[in-house]
Image (cartoon, rainbow, N blue to C red):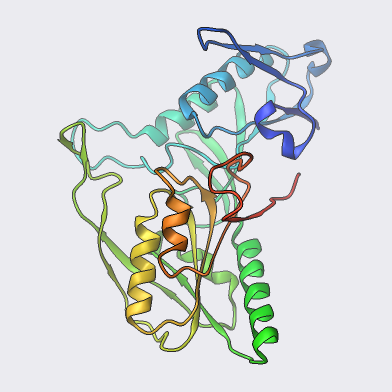
Amino acid sequence: MEKLITPYCEDFGKSNIVIKHFPDNESYVFIPKIEAQKDKKITIYHRLYPEQDKRIFELMLILSRLQKETKDIELFAPYLPYARQDRKRKEGEVVSADVLCELLKNYGVKKLITYDCHFLPKPGNFTRAGLAIENKSAGPKLYAYAKKYFDEENKKNNTAEEFVVVSPDEGSSYFIENAKGQKTHSLTKTRGEAKANGEENGIHADIHTMEGEIDVEGKNVCILDDIISTGGTIIRAIEHLKARGAKKIIVGATHGVFAGHRIAEKILNNSCSDLFITNAIAVKNATFDPLVQVLELPKS
């Protein structure tokens, strides 16, 4: 298998695809030694976030040339943008997740490999809009970090306290499956209405309520989720657990989107003792570093 790695995925290997930008910000793509890819099985390593619209178009440029040489192309994109726009809530809305999956399929991607895709219920192999998807999970890595964190806390304080693992919504409840033999719980959230450009949207609305009875009185808690975007879900979950007597709370997520001003800092200032994510979204030169612990995903 041949690996083609864009500059956005250099932490997974040395880049061998050239992407540059002209003064007007148009993208330029060059694949050196393209003839060497003839009839090869190719895996493209390419991050689609941030600047998702631009990154997607750059991927289309890569695929448009590469599919002339081979029909066996896989894409490794650790975070899939538009995955939260996965269903129609009212007439006239576009299901953007389907559009992106269909686009990738039509441009020659035989399989997408990603991590904790928001519209998928668990790790495994799925199909959406004709695109084969292998959904991996960073859940075990996140849980291992949390266990080590609290083991070190116990050692430091000469205690033997267990911790409770919580999923802040039912959609990411499979994260707590990694905590076998340990107390786990899923909360339920209700969203209010959102406004976008003066219109009702409701897609990424603010969290209105967080529900779920759970015994956390005097106990340490680890919240695990797939995405932290504006931080609303996590902050409401922390408040819900603190109101029920939770002791120390730490938060882990696969994708640190942090869509807003100082999101990580707001979470850490809201009774969160430790915040950790993976490098599914590149964190180099990010404004929240070094506030957040970053766990590296496997390189292959």
